[in-house]
Amino acid sequence: MDCRLDGQVAIVTGASSGIGQAVARGLAQAGAAVVVNYNSHAEPADALVAEIAASGGEAIAFGADVSDEEAVGRLFAETVARFGAVDIVVANSGMQKDAPTAEMSLADWKRVLDVNLTGQFLCARAAIRQFAAQGDRGVSRAAGKILHMSSVHDVIPWAGHVNYAASKGGIAMLMRTLAQEVGPRRIRVNAISPGAIATNINREQTQGAPGEKLLELIPYKRIGAAVDIANAAVFLLSDMADYITGATLYVDGGMTLYPGFEDNG
Ligand code: BGC
Image (cartoon, rainbow, N blue to C red; front, side, top):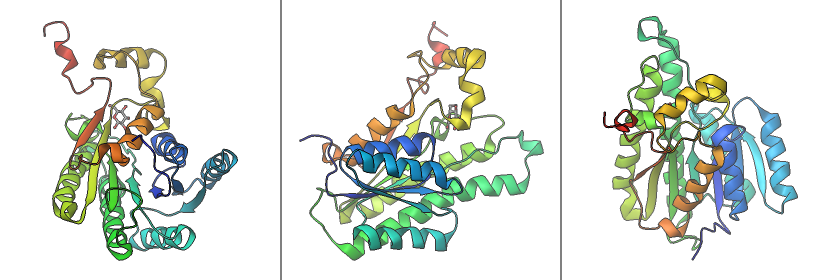
């Protein structure tokens, strides 16, 4: 058995850049037909679809704001119309709107919670409904798989990012509760918590001198690449991980290992 996803249909939200883009590419390389969801940037999503098609895979791009219930409905309806089913959902869309708490607007608090947490709920709910409607397709040992993209900030508090950290903390219990609830239907639900992965979201933090400083927080002494997360996603979604549900896989070079104690504290 290996990490293949042939014959399976995957939706990846927020797949026009960063981690989502790498995950969509990875799932396509593993044999899945992929729906590349984006919110506002159609061009990179279309480019990824073209790249996947050029290497013999199947993909479409579909624009939808994951915090909008109707848009999520359209995303799933289009996927079923084009590919006949949904086997895998990667709820990846996420954003930061950082500010010290005293200066954070209610609008920025709400927007981050809406996209990062409510968006993941809406996608997971749509997935569970679709898995029930289509029944066992026989393409995987599980009857459906949901993967939530979280962050090391589901356990590491992050001053100046209270909306983001709260959303990621929320994902941890969303994921575990769902895993408990739908396990009897053979649906697996897991999370990946990336550490510092170089993408647009943290460009200023990961490059140059700030990037060097960041290594102090990473025992493995390298900033992650989006493909590190894609590799973990392919594994968790494949039958190699069929007995894994309700788990969070930290892909963080050890960032969650209290690096301040590296030299005896
Ligand atoms: C954030 C990044 C940050 C990383 C480690 C991620 O969840 O989106 O901006 O670099 O956590 O702090």
